[in-house]
Structure formats: C-alpha cells, structure tokens
Image (tube, rainbow, N blue to C red; front, side, top):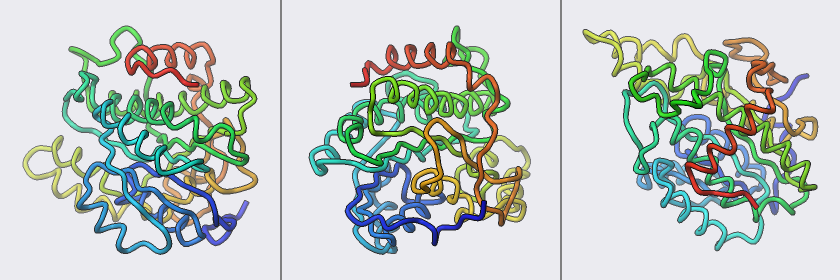
Length: 301
C-alpha cells in the first residue's frame, strides 16, 4: 500500500472535529482536511494558541474550547458543536498528555487516563447523535505503540499508590485502542452508519513527550533529551498520515488499527498495524466500557 495525503478524497461539505488541533499531529490533520474542502472544528484547551494556529490554515476552520480534564467542559464543548452543526462526518480523538507527574483532573480522575481516555469517551458519547446516521461518518481515536506495555488496572484504575508515568500512559493508550474497538462492535450491533477506527503515529516529533521527558530526567538531562527528541523521530507531518488514512481512505475498515509500517518509519506510508491481543479481548473491552460509563455518567445513544 502506497498512500500519502494527496490521496485524500475531496472533503467538500464534510464536517471534521479534531481535538488538540492547535499543534503537532492534530494541526497537520486539520491542515490537510481543510485543504481538501472540509469544515474543520478545532476543539482545543488553549484558545490563544488555537487561534494562532488557525490563522495559518487554509479553508474553513473554527475553534471550540475543550478541556478534556473537565467533564463539564467536555459536555459544554459538545453542546456548542452540536448547536453549530446539523451533522458531523468525522471525529478525530487526537489530544492527549504523556509521561507527566501524578495528578488529578477536575473530576478526580488520574489525569493521563482521565484526559486521554475518559475525556474522549465522554466527548464521543455526547457527539454521537450528530454522527451515527451520517453515511460515511467515522470516529478515529489515536492510540500509541505504548499500548503494548499496558494493562487496564480495573481494581485501581487511578493507580493510587502505584503510579508510574509510563505505566499510566500505557494504560491510557491501551484504553484508547480498546474503546475504539468496542465502539465499533456496538455501532455495528446498532446498525449505525458510523465506523470506529484506531491509529498510532509511530514515534513522532511533537510537543506531547517533551514536558514529560523534561520533568522526569534529573540534572538537566531531560532538557537535553527534549532537544534531541526530533533527531530520532519522524515529523509531526508524517505522524499525521495514519490518522488521515484512517479518517479518509476508502480502504480503511472499522474496528481496525493503522500505523507506520515499522516502529520508527519516517517515510513509509501507513498500513494496518497489529494490536496487542489484550486490546482485542471483548470481555475486557466491555468491562472498560461499563467502567467508563460509570465514571463519566455518559451513556451512548
């Protein structure tokens, strides 16, 4: 398979919502979709940075405030988008944090799990009525190769007394992947038009890892590692290709997982990736879904 952003079909008349679209992979995805004619809604926490990013984008773009660390903000953002749009064709759950020190969201959730997974779980649930009856609509959730090192700590989901930065991140990205797969099962069972897909960017040079690297490493080593990070990773542009492939390619299939052909592929096209077997366990997927509903109070229509 040889795919590149120039293969994206015409997106005229389509509405795309992208979380974290003010930088990195989200910004590159917003650029390509807007350039192909989509109306792009950038759902971002920092409005000042989002507006600065939006001014550099082509086509029709707009901004909605979204703080995934707050379930109230998630609900308000979804309501604002639903008020602006009669339909949504594409939702890209892209925003996230990585490797930060232990903390809690506004609602008391461990913040990597709370922002990366629970925020997107609730945001998707609130927006689903605008997606599910739209032919060709898709929900793309960005996971990570880090999911392979994780498991869902059902009996201690917030990792109280057991917190580790990589451990929490791996759990959150595994949850992203399991959510996407379980959502596809439920959409198919309901006869919905929408398909749910997952992807990962490989090891990409974005600002996601930088703060965590700097926090974790002593004696200034973190700052050096943060400076060197782009030298050993692919660009945010290339990192966005699996997201865009999953979002737009006629060959991308619901319930499947897409990423670079190799771990640190800098130039190769996206292809179907192999999830860890744990992520495909339907019983665990259903259990995570039920837990996520309980924690967020969001029930999918």
